Amino acid sequence: VANDPLRSGTGSDYGVVMRVLLFAAAREAVGQAAVDVDVANVAGEVTVAVVRAKLLLQWPSLQRVLAQSRIAVDHRFVSDHEVVSAGQEVAIIPPVAGG
Amino acid sequence: MAHVALHNTPLSLDAVFAQLRHDDAGAVVIMIGCVRNHTRHNDQVVAVAALHYEAYEDMAVQALRTIATTIEQETPGVRMVIEHRFGDLAIGDIAVIVGASSPHRAEAFAATRAAIEELKRSAPIWKRETGDNGVVWVGMGP
Image (cartoon, rainbow over all chains, first blue to last red; front, side, top):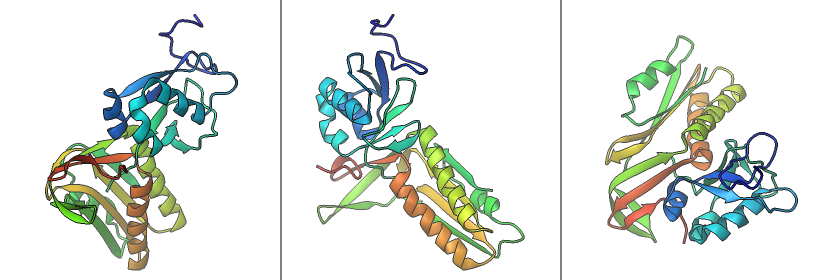
């Protein structure tokens, strides 16, 4: 099961892939509303910085928008040092423009 | 008790006012954000034809609730309402309504101003402009 690429991690373990939600310019850069980031071979903890690096490897088209984006985990803005697990809701937040 | 909402249908000023007014509220301040027919790009005024708002709905509602309840807790007597539109909007449509009521006007003005400024910083809502400048996500740098 640990090598099943379709398995999305839940609960306390990292699983194999981490779902990342995309909005606005990030969604358009990839052409889909969410992507699955492969974190199976990450040595040590999966931080937001690791997720950012993996995203760029798998979707180079995200480079421009990701550089300007914040990351939210479970609806909260987090720093690049924050550790994330696959059961959490991770999202790329491009520059916001509400109001 | 704060009230916040996201709608993909037209916002109602009357509904917001009804949420804000009560017998202790000597002042009700309401800020309405409307879709403007122009924007600025590289110091040039550029015509805007239409706007599309996108929201990360769960997080946006949570962000609006945090903004509203934080202000209410910091300023006893203040009641906050924040409603934001998403989807396709035309020029002149209401994009956001932020309101505060309180016994006296100073607190209501301050609360309304604080809420709209924090919304613009932290609510995960995006605006895509269509106009003479093409189609752009507002706020995106080069």
